[in-house]
Image (tube, rainbow, N blue to C red; front, side):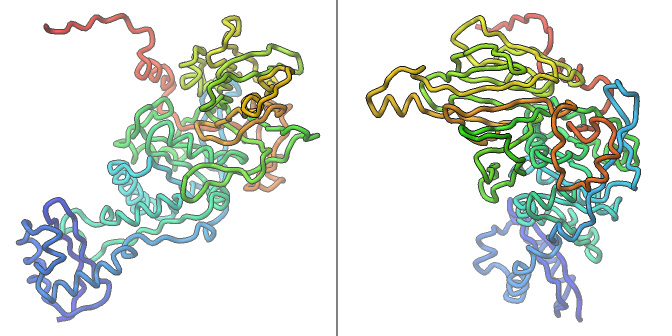
Length: 482
């Protein structure tokens, strides 16, 4: 009889999927009984002839189409344009309500910790939930995530052979270039640690960041108020405009190369398809950071010579391993390890923290958000004559700059970096490639700046420093048995 067969079985620790999309002639009961009665076969013996010839031909045809059977990858360019939510609440309240005035979110970008099986399985579970409960929502992922899900498409199969053999849905996933994704994304969902959140937000470096819903599946969790077990209720609250959000500052950095007369035009970061690192098309750029911007010596054996100015006034000439410019969100990261203070996310400021300065008089600073910080890289010879080529190469060695942990560029002697708070009115509003100019004039003050993160409660930050840092914990003596 003519039937449509979909079956799967486990051979030891391997999962072999049999998929036949066309109509074939076989006996369903006999084929299924054969699979269920052969749990001791290994994958090697299966491929070398343990299956009957009729089943081997089915297996051969099945593996050809399995990769495109249940995961359908399409171009993100076909999706509707991005929509922007409103943030409603008291002017000075640290938390506001997330409201979708033009309808619930349609395009959901999911970022995940790469190549970790438990996170990949959770991602598939979340995608299946979205497609089942919110059929009008479109799932967007980056290209490498789409490939990873396609390589693990067995996660979209029913767990048991008898579950849903007739109606296994196809899961449509959209992907494309970063510049295409950012102009389609209504909501960003992160599955991983704090680093995963930063990588996702960094895609929106020079455009308005979407609201961010984060699930804790990594090492650190300062930005992760939700456990993945709460994914259904937490996403529902966001979808139905019932979620609370907290705004987190971003800092803005302009790089001015030696000899440039003006501030460079903004450059949108594009991700390298293979290395997953960010690069910029010109040596001068404007970038934004949610955590911190670090200027450091890298692998060089010597220290950096830097001149620091605040609002045009000379502050200090320092010799150090580098400088950290952090947001309040980044105050619990590298800045804290270098001796900086912990700052609540609702405090609008910039942290300036030196890294191992030679002078102990240069202490960490907390500057107002209105501060305009300028750092000039100086040569190491300090005007002295150098005769040897090795010495000349050393004194002209460059300083390395990273943004939220991603290496971005190098600064040569004579180059400058300008650091400001993104939320300040005196910072020029950058052109948003995803938003019409007429919509920009309707925004409330600061609504389009910073990153709005979905919060679980008003005590998320206090719970974080207590749970992650053990804030003000007493000394404990560990007794070791002899």
